[in-house]
Image (cartoon, rainbow, N blue to C red; front, side, top):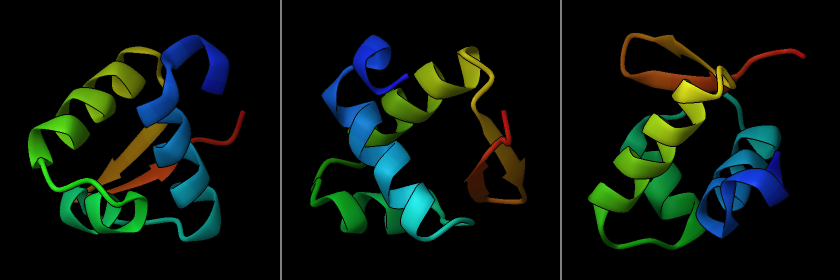
Length: 64
């Protein structure tokens, strides 16, 4: 999935593997991105691929 979705999504996947259940802002801080829109775009891409579970404003990776 990391190769298919690109470098930003790959970083998000790595961050969520280390610490599941993070908000968009926490993900941005974890991967070192200052633009929150970058995270929104990555999360949207990952949601389209059915990789994320959302609980309130927090995201985790789905078990595959």
